[in-house]
Image 1 (tube, protein in one colour):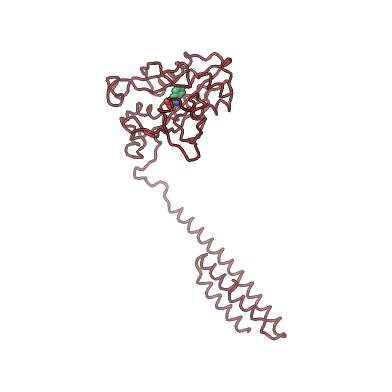
Image 2: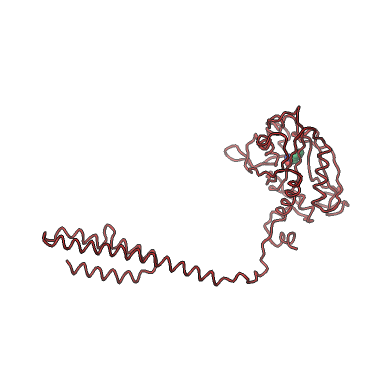
Length: 342
Ligand code: PHE
């Protein structure tokens, strides 16, 4: 039996030196120490050994078992260290000063303008809020004064989930939650991706971005609204922009307005993007309806406020002269990077 033990030790040494990966070492562990392994078989074989030899052989086998265990762990450790060394060397070979071949990343134009707007509003004391894209019917419609069966829902058909939730059709879906979060007074802007079931054309997409804002305090009036809108637009365009305000209907504002800017693509002459009118609808807005304030836990007798829903995607088109909205969602890097690279 002693010879068998010694032969197995030698066989193990040989096989171990050939095991260069952690998988191979694991195979060896099973082959020697596993339930059906050779060392285990030796231990089982002790039964047949005479009583006087049993103790001695038992010690030999156990010693072999310990050696096998130790050597296996040493081998695993050595493989890990070698792998680490390889990685360090590979990292050293990587030359961070190599030219990139022109493939420099850039922000999407919508991100650029969104950040710019966030900065402008933050400087005017607004907080910047994040909000979900999947919302409940209550958040998207009921809380903003659009009850079930209200005709205003027709213009905001969207994508419904099996659990009854939906992809938000406008950033106004966040109004209620933000009012409940802060109470009055509050100033907040909340950019977000919105979804509608639209027939696609040069100015309609099923996925687009808005930037909503709310200011609620004592004695807030339409003049505050106009002041903030004008300040924001002149900062974004870095020049004076012609605007016009006309009445607009949204169930969550009263009175409601459409703020249009003179089309920056054609300079107001009329083109396909502005449908020949020379004006682009950019920022619906108005004084927050008392039902909406009340739903948000704010007393309309004490507080008033304005809200606006800036079409961020549209603003980007105006600022960069993008004629077709679909270019912005195309993921075409060549088309997009021209707007954000100097
Ligand atoms: N949520 C409206 C829309 O997407 C825009 C809006 C926001 C209008 C805030 C008024 C006030 O059509």
